[in-house]
Length: 273
Image (cartoon, rainbow, N blue to C red):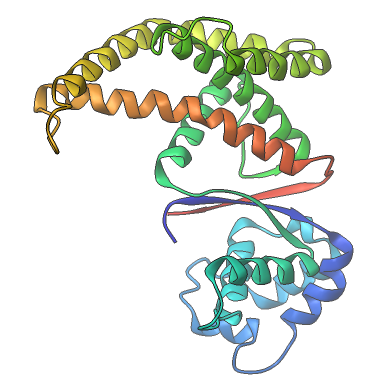
């Protein structure tokens, strides 16, 4: 596993029956033996996880859920003839039948770190400490902010960096996404996003200039089969990666909101690094 975020929904009824039954199975590959034989640095206790599965799976901690997730992976070995995609489908199907539904993933370091950077901004704006152990409402609120902020940023880059103008189809779609949020949230998240965008305005102007300078260099080297970024443009390259990664979170946020759907309950987010 690289640096990734895994998002889970929980089902109390399924956990109380099917997950509890899985966790109490005996044998070499039982969950109890897994905890005893693995590097259980957080001191997760089998009896406590079993009780939470029985009484209310929403109460499971992130450390406890991580051990359950890793255990499911270890007990579901990939068959030689099985594709990795089919293996994951089988794994996540079994977990869902046990009340732990994997429903979204941010699967690489750069977007994960951009996601956390936006969370820090959101916490500063709202004075609310956001947790990876949250409710569906708390996640939707964050996603509404993310869609508004990254939407504003993407429109800005389309106009001032890519020179596409304001009426391209992507900008029109972004306006629609933001308006849908505004209609149900009284413009609250849009105003937060606008505040953050204005706070970053000078930084973004400088970033656009740096991206343009980097693009000039790329064009000047286009006749070569390969070339390196010179040291004096290394910061320009890093800045381009940074702002484009934040902008691209728009589609992660839209996909995550769609995957969350009308679910009501606890959401658990595991961070693998």
